Length: 207
Image (cartoon, rainbow, N blue to C red; front, side):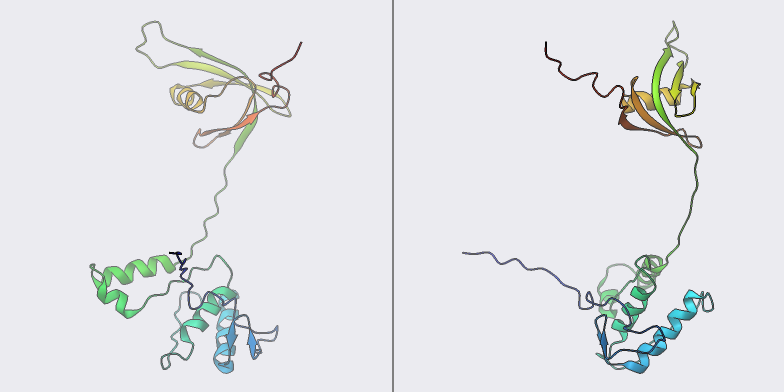
């Protein structure tokens, strides 16, 4: 017996925007939307105000009979604002059928619908490991210390290593000839690979 593959397709997954031109005039059929010209134009005005920062922190209520395109227009607004704009769709039956409280269900939906963009800058050191020296205490009781020689395009620098940095180097299995990055704020180490000059150290060589 042949098995039939069933895929779930969202009812509004084809919508790519509000179908408006540059003057916010709606096209009859565009970007997955058909009809509701006046409502789409009004939604386009709201989207323009959001882009200009004139309606931030406010809500828009779309009212109408079932099947008139309220959810489709809301999806079009989210798509028009960009791919990073979250869109959370839920039905009243979902809230009543969940085992959690209605307040908790709505709170989670609101949290999923909040789009916050956080820009974080960090200073990264990238270079080739020239040498790693680790000094182990004779009693094996104290913390390890060491030195890391790192060569960049501009210079060669020696860094003092503490126990945390030594553990990070050991975890990443860093050795001489590896290219690594070090986050100056957190001390996180990432191994990017071998340097070009040392990339053939382990190649099998013929006679």
